[in-house]
Length: 426
Image (tube, rainbow, N blue to C red; front, top):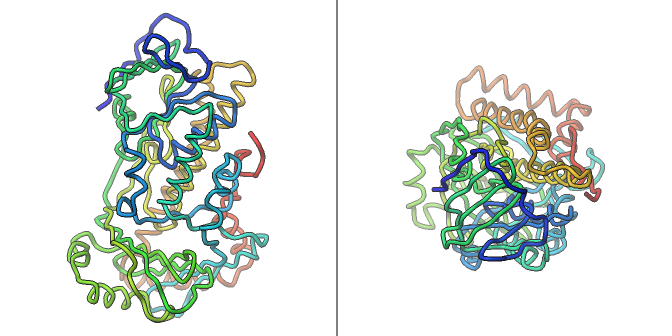
């Protein structure tokens, strides 16, 4: 657990010199706690904006790259792909990512459906499916190459003092870090958030996501399927080759029994939900199970502290937007801090951080609410609701202007987008 203090303290702000050690103290502009997808990408973005960064992560990078560590995949919306391109990450993963050209939404056994075509949004893919292991590999290589980023991993933060002049942190191994700002990007269980006494609202969905990869006989044609069942959404997401990622939402009390099935029985249960449109199936690799919940922090900022990604908000995977919202945090925070630095302002100043908090508050709340409502609306068999939602799917499918709006939303092209997400440089 990180211990923290926000008491006033006299002294100069931490030096903006490149990360360096003098007398046992490392000095930098920004201390990023957590070097996963959000924290690592933020470190790359801040370096692109001219800032020096120390990123601390408790995990051993080599362990994170093992196939058994994580079999999940992530949907990266078009706007977030532009961000990754802008910070030098996309080139290393582009060849191994599958584009999402169409999205098909269906409800149990109903004949009504909703089909989104990428050509309605301008011709570019909705986004891309990225295997988490690949993302981690490319991110690690990029962080190690950047001169303005110092990655400390495995390492952990023991204490953080946030005062008027800057941030002082002590690592578990005794090293000290002085910075002007600390960013908590250390996930849903963020010790940085907890130590700052930022309140968290959270509830469980009593659902578990069963995740695996399947090889199939017929091509997926790069169509992502979201099929709603009474237990929750069942997603079929295109990967490279004749492979798809499965995100199967199941009742939490039933998930353990499904996970314990042998391969034949598991494939039988999978086939009952997936159907036969992809032909014969084979599970590739392990299966994973992840309990589902929603949570959000009361505030994304405090004195010389900003939260990003799951440390600030965690949502249901029903729309595949969790990582995208974290990357939107990255783009907004990097732009706010870069602009402040160019103006000669203190990047840890309360007013600077307030701009970031205002920018992200509505967007994050809207997505949290939308995913929560969609899951509650579709994860049941209540007949009046079934009829209402089927009529809604059919109606939207016949309204091109509304479909185009939803298409641009899925691509991440709606709202006040940061420069990196518009394909512009910081």
